[in-house]
Image (cartoon, rainbow, N blue to C red; front, side, top):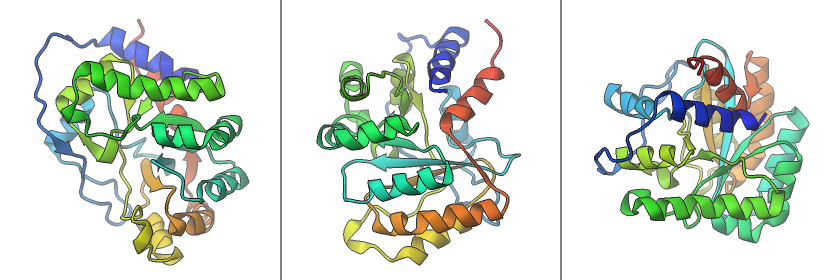
Length: 263
């Protein structure tokens, strides 16, 4: 399924194209939205929504179907990723893991396991910087370094999904990363789960996973969270009972690719 990402990225570039010489703003933007209420899709606001769509980035799946896409940010390992992988394997759910260079270097066995078990390994940059402070060449180095590091472990170079570190970006960053062939993926469900010294318990994570669920939801979860590792099994089980199905970002990209104009 991962080859669909490459197909879609290439199709977008050929179909729409971006003038690399065109000057665009590099004003720093923090990704954010009005959270889901009563299981309705969240609202990022017209201006932000239009900017994201302009560069074929996205933060929602098909909002007409009760589908959920699980994504995880992996800046470093805190001992809980194996448990998360166990839960996904149990439920036959494909996750997307956005990894940094530090994670790849320190956890090659987990990278191998993710790949072997059919998960998607996404790009979270090598050093986790604010990409708005980087030149185009520096952005490319940050992203391609992760791609190469993952390739050296898995033999695959299909990790073209990108999540900007800390959700910080700009129009320039969106333009450059698209030019480089990376597909930016934001999120529509999130909560404060990354503060490892301020974990609030399994119920806290579970309640947020259930309360914020909505059709087409793209979850952002951090694997450093003990709460998430303990809540994920029950959350997936109960969301399935509520009629939700779980798909991968590859599935979503395939659906989008099928709707592109034929070349």
